[in-house]
Length: 425
Image (cartoon, rainbow, N blue to C red; front, side, top):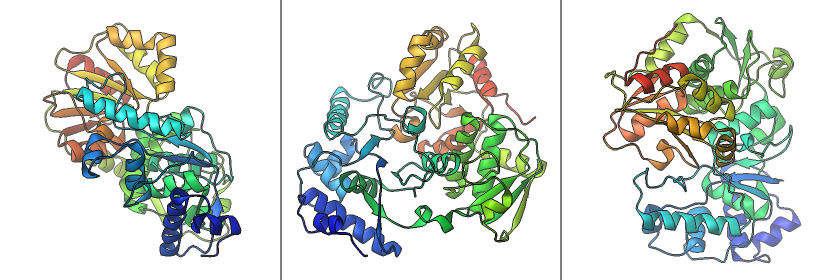
């Protein structure tokens, strides 16, 4: 790679061993990808809160030693300097207020809190969410970023027009200390053009339908870039959040275009940058039903132990909607209703009275984590209902449970009755 003088200085160790290790990691990464140079980034989202299990695998050590090994791939502890650029912590392993509900031991919770405190000392913003764009980190069109979390990257790439690849823990941590990442992938303008056209022969309007469309697109296009045409209703943040998360889960989609809605395409022709699509796909009633059946393929028993809402983390609008649907009703005695949201929005829910409404109904509002990341469920859980295609994709595989996927109304009804009655309208 061709390095600039400031990058050479980092690689030579003139800014300390941690920055040197970070730059060496990025150079190795870039050369493996065929990148010719670095690009400056001033917005990084990574994951640097470490679990007791990771500490045990590392053979112990303080948070700096864990950062050295897990985030910088160093075989020796390094003195970690403050981050060089604006950096945020993504979703973590624990709700700092409800860790006991997760089944976590006090000493393990304290270890995670110590790791979190170390990140804060480095200047990492403790957003602790998979949706930083919901709580203040909103990059602009054309801004080069280095973000982990596939559902977040596809959102900022597509809806906002920022430029990021899906980074790993190590490359994101290295970017925090250097302000650099290799110039490749979706940082390069020509790589952002659409490669396939998807014609939608269905009136996609609900959050559930946006999740179904996203999951189908990810399955058939894998990591290609679609331009999606014949969308008849303008989707809001929640719908695009669920759409992108589903597409990123089923196939690795990191960028899509919807003419007149997303940031970089006013027309299909503009999304394709003058080239013909490699293939035209059609999504209609048959594809919609097949996708719904696939997402519900692990569901067998109608008795629901847990209803989980908030993957990606729920917006304040979604929390408000759950409160409206509950409307004085109570969660069934044999069922739990858990809603996950960013910590900042949890505070807003407290102020709006939503937390009290949920608690009176027997539901629980959590933040900072989710069952798939933290790998926790209520004791004895065998059947989970979800409004997220992403969670329906991951949770049954990760936790060995049955999964039902449907609308948020279906999920709230399951929480109140204790039984899954959702279907495809």
